[in-house]
Image (cartoon, one colour):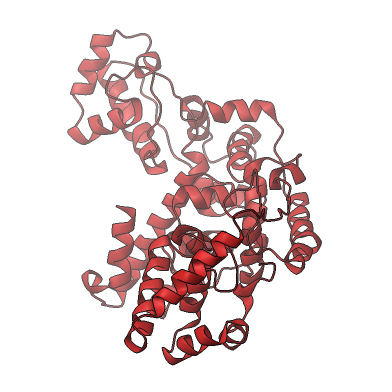
Length: 435
């Protein structure tokens, strides 16, 4: 069938159905989705019958949902006409037989990535993500490509009008977005990031002392301090790779409190590290959010972090410190989506006044992350941190950080308003999602 019946109303569909089937459907008071599922499953419009899974893909819901709609629709019809299902089965067999020797004409579409060969996949994915915020365009795009952006073939019920929109509106919009994206080509920065979170072994940090002396000094620390060392260096303290859970606060405690204690126990000259006021660091990077800056700081290796700690508040004059932090900001947030309006606000679907007020007071990017991650969007669908990271070309760890901080902010606001946090449904469900 060449015509796309998906965009037709219920009355328009009934006008195209065989009269016997249309009367049965009307009498049973079927809803639009039920009619669409039966058309897909039984080839009622002489279309090739589809499996439940293909039906769900076409109509943008799960196989289980397609099965339920079919069962519900047949049950409604059976109450009035117990033998009607045999008519549908006969129609299905007829269409399958007629199409046995036919080949569906294939509309060949290019790989979406081949259209933009100069851009990395993650950039193209993100441009698609923003282009498809309009539901109509999203339906057309996925009707053409489904989930296969590499090798699309035989788009089902993809009309000439849809193809015109794809080529004249959607492809150019994706191109325009990509042209505004900043692509990092600095190989040195790329190499640094590949080694990000790789830090000096604690034995190298105190290279003038023996392994036994260092272990003895560690044993003199509190249990919490020892756990923080293990969190940073791993159980064997050799070949460390920072845990994804390592935070900026961990860095501060480690260098300002733990290192001086170890130096004391090892009879070494003690350094007095003072972590600069974070507000001074924020001022160096006005185009970035505080969360983005703090996230970048957690990736500094030992030597880089020591340079920041030794800056003694002279940050504005210390170009070395600014350069160190900037290279991580450039890598993790390269697309200039910071505090500006490059990101279109996603619609919030919530009647929670406390939640809405908090969301409306944060920047666009972080607001969208929370809306998508916690399912506060119009479809109430929760997206994983990896899905959002791919769409926005930012680290998944940053997404988890933003979401956890927002939930803490929300919890604090509930307490301030004397609302029982244990009874707040949104908070409890969100905590479970992140568990």
